[in-house]
Image (cartoon, rainbow, N blue to C red; front, side):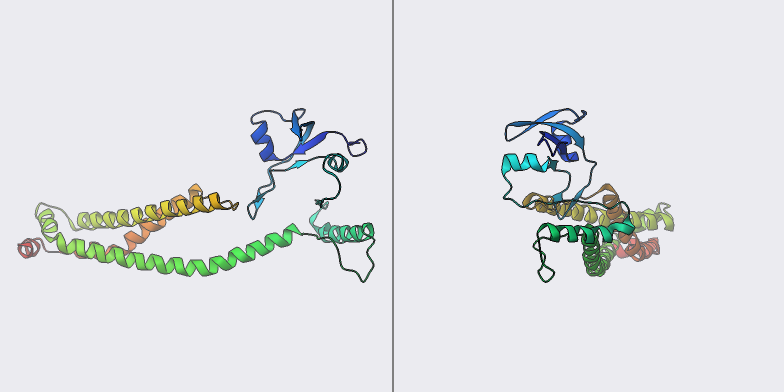
Length: 259
């Protein structure tokens, strides 16, 4: 009915609804396109984005209404779904046949239109990100090992420079596990602060990329927590040897050596 009568009705995407009618029921509301009022008759569910292109920032009007306002000399996109996954491939082939008949193409002529299979694109994106992960993961592990070695060396220097402090604490009654725990906590905090600095740097880079391009960059809370836990754990693991060395110091020799 809307197509036959070129009615001024529209269906809006979730993002459009949130921008124009946040907290309200958008159905029945009126918005303007080219100063022409359109009644909202539907709202899409949230669909997300792909390659920085939001699927929620959309507005749909009858194709005849579109032609009346903007003309019919522009390209259009048709979106379709199948009833179930098993019939999806058949639906694509049927759409291709219908488009070729519509465009009066002969059997030996190539398609003058394009068909995009979202599932194939999603699979290609998964393969691409998987390839990136295969390259990035070893580099990340090497970086963690190098960082852990640096933390261990720093803590070994700290143990050497604080020999008198360790000896004094032991002379006053501190046990081996107290010294061990102290240096493990210090190495974990040192590494965790390094992880926090890296997280802030990554957030700045993500914000810059999002500002300069249309690619969405988001750092979620689980990844923030995971990065802090991993960095702290690296500091604790590589701090075991310096902490053990500090806990084994003889208090008398430590005090004498410091003098």
